[in-house]
Image (cartoon, rainbow, N blue to C red; front, side):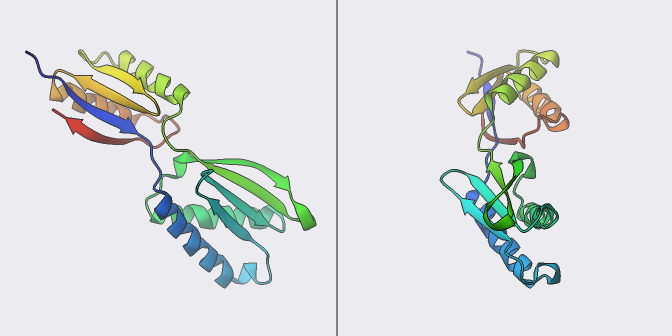
Amino acid sequence: MATTYSFDVTSIIDLQEVDNAINQARKEIGQRYDFKGSTATIELDQKEATLTLAAEDAFKLSAVWEVVQVRLVRRNVPVKNLKPGEVEPASGGTVRQVVTLQQGIPSDAAREIVKFLKEQKLKKVQAAIQGDQLRISAPAKDDLQAAMAALREHDFDVALQFGNYRP
């Protein structure tokens, strides 16, 4: 009987690391000279997986967003999985922006990954969509490693993590 090897492709954000990065960003904004007397805020809603950024104007809002991104990158949170929304006016003459934290691989990106793997013409490599992750399987470990290398080189607009390697 031939054995089949497999691994899972996921895209997960560690919300605890996001919370730590947001706390660091709040501290930095409170200490920066250009934010003295500013009402810039960052709110994290872990249940909805969203960040809400608010500031007096669009310029300060973009500065807040840059601080948040730097802190997230330093804590190894994939910034590709953050989907910023439109800048919208809020109460008191301020502006607000909601950033969605994308957990899992969206279905359109999953279909694109499956199509990409089929185009690579790797021998007997199968990709199966399982909810918000993919399972890649093949009878040879070398084929799986080639598939993993091909996925790392291509940009799917979502950060990919590989795990659960099974012989």
